[in-house]
Image (tube, rainbow, N blue to C red; front, side, top):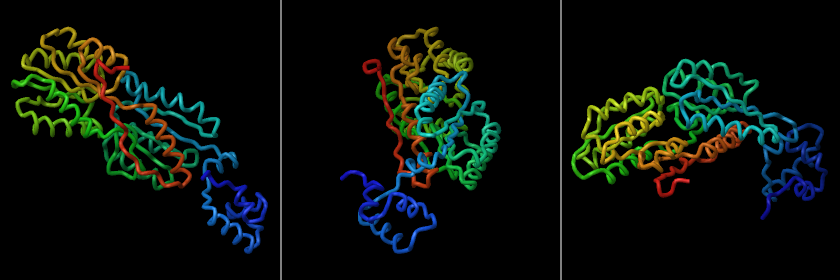
Amino acid sequence: MGKVTVFEVAAQAGVSLATVDRVLNGRKGVRQVTIDRVQAAVERLGFRRDPFAAALATKRVERLLFILPDARTNSFMRALHEAVSAAAGPMAEQRVSIETQDYPAFDDAALARTLSAVDPQHCHGVAVVGTESPAVRREIDLLAERGVAVVTLVSDVSPSRRAQFLGIDNTAAGRVAASLIGRMSPAQPGAVALLVGRMTLHDHAERRLGFEQVLRREFPHLTLLPTAETLDDSAVSEPLMRGILAERPDLVAIYSAGAGNRGIIAALRADGRLPAPVVVAHELSAHARDALLSGIFTAVLHQDQEQEIEDAISALRSLAHGVPGRPTKPMRLQIFLRDNVP
């Protein structure tokens, strides 16, 4: 059965479209007997209002804000910015205004200030790549109290009053990385390096947790080295990786749970050891793709940035119109090897 329209409601109730509109929107000027007739028709037909169509009819502009880390040193965040820009044009035709605001990566105080500056009178929903800090949680909670819908992207902020999290299951991603490394590494003992952007990021902390759980439980012959922070910056990750390679001739595997992959690639190319370490990284950037094809990377775990932005826009629009958010499932984690890289 197709979607029930207001035309069918009007015909069933024996009234005009204008009368149906007045009843549905609770406006005055309609007799109670007519209201009852329209409401009975609504119930019989199972009519459900489309809040988005109503917004178009009233010429209301929905204003959404994406708060993202700056993308100067992070290819994944750059792709996320580009996905927002690509979505903004088509959504403008539906009277949805989408803006982006940057904050310095890993800067909790700057993110809290950016959230605090959001004006509920001019913003209906916020999507934010969050960092874990009491100040950030407080500002998200305050926005929710002031009627602004908030969803988190890529990295969650929990506990908080954000409505939904949109991203992959990062703990599962870490477990997958450990399984790949454990099965592809030599059977003899060896060292494994774990590099993250920063442990204050919820997604990086969860990846580490999942990775360590599986590696220690299922592959006890592999020694996990202390977690190293790269700040998602290749200028940091390259000398850090060079140092690990120089100090650990027994290094058999590397898990890059954050960004900064260009630095890791450069260090591995300069080292040139054989057999090369098994390397699992995140996000299929141009650099990661080349590393896969050349054999420097063994596997890349990927999340679809365009799908993330599309889901965020859909969730924010529903929440802003008072439509309960659909139960969210983690985004599908994609695994790329050299054999299936697009």
